[in-house]
Amino acid sequence: MSFKRVLIVDDEAPIREMLTLALEMAGYQCQDADSAQAAMALVVDNRPDLILLDWMMPGISGIELARRLKKDSLTATIPIIMLTAKGDENNKILGLEAGADDYITKPFSPRELMARLKAVLRRTSPEGEGSAVEVNGLTMDPISHRVSVAGEPLEMGPTEFKLLNFFMTHQDRAFSRGQLLDYVWGGNVYVEERTVDVHIRRLRKALGEHHAPLVQTVRGMGYRFSSQYQ
Image (cartoon, rainbow, N blue to C red; front, top):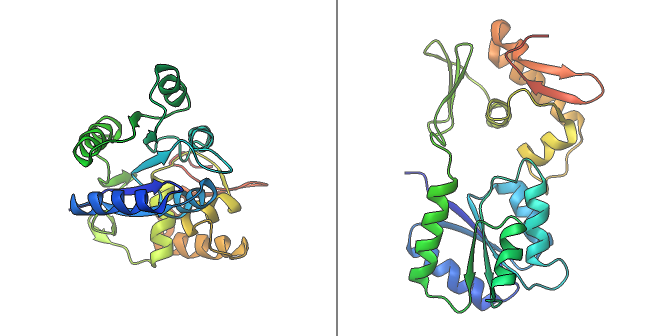
């Protein structure tokens, strides 16, 4: 079973603890952050399945964080439920216009939260999420963590698998080395950009002569994964 990951963003520790307890009892995996800055680092590193986001926080507000996440193509699809004491209609509209998928007014019961959370996940989870991806006979299965060609398994390291997983789920788009470091290694991992080149070479070697050309170098930019050969 694949457990959904929820990021709880609220500057009040008792609320984070209460939400974490309720969600973990319901089978969700939780992480929490007490600020928008801390939340951004966790989003980049762990790509949660859903974010519970408090509206009123010091510094960058929840609604501003929601706007930033929705503007980035790589985080725009992560569903957001706003948590707020602001219950009037105008504020609900502001939250939804900022990109929130739902809105819960404090105080709320754990039962209401679970019902809203499940409904948002049903609406926003793409069909076939987590299923195997196949390109030109190359198959990557994120659930079993296997890569194969025509049924024959390919051996590769964990970083090469993460790179391939990212590439095959974001095809025909060019990414800089910095972007790959953020979205594959994580925003809090400090390594040199040339590290990407080393793992790209290892990935191409693991893919073999026939499928290595799927991982393409984009001059002056970085890399992309495409079945349209250069």
